[in-house]
Length: 332
Ligand SMILES: Cc1ncc(COP(=O)(O)O)c(C=O)c1O
Image 1 (cartoon, helix red, strand yellow):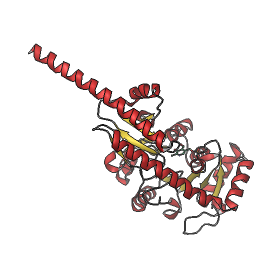
Image 2 (cartoon, rainbow, N blue to C red; image 1 turned 30 degrees about the vertical axis):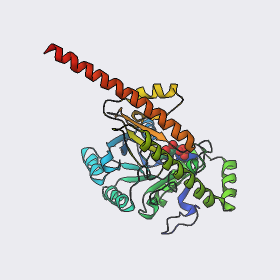
Image 3 (cartoon, protein in one colour; image 1 turned 90 degrees about the horizontal axis):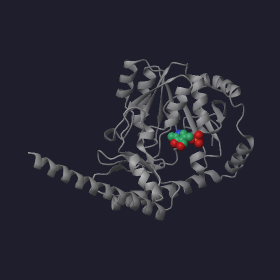
């Protein structure tokens, strides 16, 4: 899978470093590519550990707000505007993205990489959801740039985050530094885990496994989409994800997903409130619903519970606003 680099997108052994999951990959890449104090752009909402690891290493995460209108994608214009506002050293992009599940088509990704590289920014691509793409195949940055650094892992393919195996593909110029940083930090990645996976790959099981997982996830995605359409009250918006493992929802303005979570938890339903994926000015009315680990029945039950809670809350608000209106009338 990782052998022999050519223009087809597979990578030469010499350009690959095995990592202890992609989380360790971010740590290595940030340590090797950036100096303390350097600014690195990431999309917001986004996967929280990017900013936490950058901050822990003394770098400055620069959060670029994205919206539903641009399908939560980072645009070249927004990237360059942030660079003009204060020089950036690099940018990290994930497509499919977490938490929104949206993907950048290859041409949009190529434009973003072009803009980044013209400005001499280091480009990091988190490709952890590649292969778990349902609308169109995710474009690997390996086909679009010789200079970009790609980070991936097996966590999502096996739905086993405890199996800590990942990899980085980097240009020759960066690989030595990455190797050195790995030696100075976690030395090795568990060899038993690597041997198990190597055997799995050698026996040709991986491609079949991926096809199977993609099918299961696609069915669950459809089940969640259908359940949302069927149950959600008017005013709740979501985008059907093109990849990944989650839906991103926007409740009507004024709703707070963290409050909803308190009631949902009592009914045995959990989700991730959207504020977790923001830093400044979070949108409290957003939330992420994961579908990877639930069967269709559980998905339908969870969504029906959420929809019911939302309807109760909406009715309360309506009654409240009528009372306020009446009180207002009396004072006139
Ligand atoms: C976008 C993204 N990147 C990276 C990771 C971390 O994965 P790993 O288990 O490989 O450290 C996650 C985990 O949820 C993720 O959603």
